Length: 246
Length: 260
Image 1 (cartoon, chains in turn cyan, red):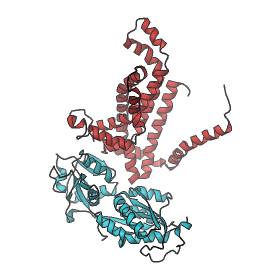
Image 2 (cartoon, helix red, strand yellow):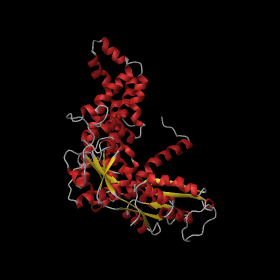
Image 3 (cartoon, helix red, strand yellow):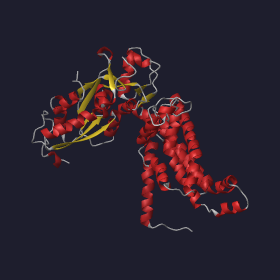
Image 4 (cartoon, chains in turn red, cyan):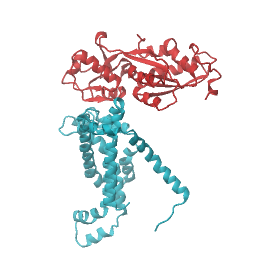
């Protein structure tokens, strides 16, 4: 494992942008909503750095936490919410996390918005089948917050367990509307449309990233984290609709 | 006749048992025993357990009514494409359940193959209804009944039926008084497997029927939701599912198949 690091084992030094001299493999555990941005990122990072290969494991943030707690071999972990990361910090399993991106909520509807959904308050309409996410999932928690703040009472037909399932319900036409992340609607291409939620009604989802304490590839892991702030990773995130941390 | 198994065989068999038993032991060790009562008494959990009981029995009912005639035809009637039909109906056993759920959406959803004509008809298992849960569970579980029942019908000595026929018994009477009693053990075993599979069904159900407490949230889905928020409680509920399934499998096998 150590040999794969190409001899660069000096720990704790200031993270640098990846250089052609570094090589090895970094395993990144990331929230499912980062799938498109990070897989896009992989190709660009590999071009910058021919020796560096990235292995991704995408899952719900809570599952990532459980896997790392059980000793899964991750070098970097990126979650879709701060409470999940907080559990890893409390267990002393990761270095100090930093937010690297934010995401906003958007209403997802069928292409062209045939039911004329204009905003959050429309989601209480009786003629709409609305799918939300379960409050145990970050997206569900944020969606609930946004609706509660506007005093909108929704009777969902289902509380989905991840964003992708919610998208499937709208894509197949089984549901008329739901609340997902801006980035999910962008990734879905033309299969769904989005109805923007005004900034003052929206909820900001923060994405923290941290280097896993037990990593044997600290320098490479830090290089990966660094280019999420300024580098190909940042560009890939912005291109997918993520916003800068704030 | 009692015989000692060869050592290598005994070791492999012991490892097989360990492979299945160790995770279950892990589950038992993590069970929050003092919380068990309060967790199981909580309205959400009770609701999910009741719904699971109802839907799994419903799925078994659908599977018996449709699956036993199918098994009989597969075992007794020779027709072109029979092996194709047999492969087709057992496909849900190997299909990833989530794919099965999406396929059900494409068929029975309101834009689906038949759903577009029948959505809104009372009793039609539209997505997000309790009927959808029963349909998803039957879709995944019925093959277990069909293949077990078909095997029973094939192995049965058909001369008993022929004898009954020569004594003047009609087809229905032959089925009820000769065939059924002879294949009853196979049917019971198949029904038990089918019901247990329906009880544990998760992937197709969550995809096709969704997750709404009281309407479509079955026990496996409730466990998944709890895993996100309260893993200890999830373990407690898993234990109930496990105990009920195990009791049913042991009890019914012993009753119908003797000491197996």
